[in-house]
Image (cartoon, rainbow, N blue to C red):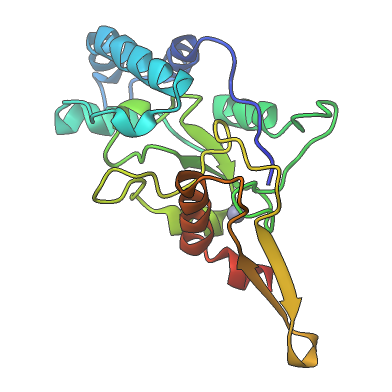
Length: 216
Ligand SMILES: [Zn+2]
C-alpha cells in the first residue's frame, strides 16, 4: 500500500467546474438555479471538509442539512465516467514518487485495478461531498462495495485507512507463513513501535476488506 497525493488545488473551484458542466434537463428543468441557490452553503461545507482534511479528522464532520431535492441534485453531479472525474482520477493515480508513471492499482488492497472512485464520506450521508476532490479515492469495485456506507464505528473510530492522509508504519506488520501444501497464510502482528490506535485501524482495514484471505 502506498499513500497517494491528494488534490492540491482549490476544492471548491473543482466543484464549481463540475456544476458549470451541468445543463437543465427535461426531468430537472430548474437544476442550474437550484444549484446556484445552495452555492454559498456548499462553499462553507467545502471549507469544513478542507479544514478537517488538513488535520486528518474527517470523522468529526457532521452531515449537512439539505432537503431531498438538493441531495438528489448534489448526488447527480457525480458520474464516474464524466470528464472532470476521469481527469481527477488520472491525476490521483500518478505514482506518488515517480509522477511520470501511473499507479492504477487500488491502494486499498493492492490487488485489483482502480476502476471506481470511493466516496470517503459516503454519498448517501454526505451528498454535499459527492464531487469533493479530496473525498474521492481511486478504488477497485470490490473494495468500494466492501466499504459501503460505514466509515466509523459506534465510538466514532475510523474503520478504514485513508491513504491520502494516513502514514503507514515503516516496521513490518504484515507477515506470511506457509502451511501444508505450501498454502500461504497471511497475518498481522503489531510491531512494538506501532501504537494501538494505528494498529487497530490497520487491522480494521484489513479485516473489513477481507485482505488476508484475498492475498492468499
Ligand atoms: Zn481494492
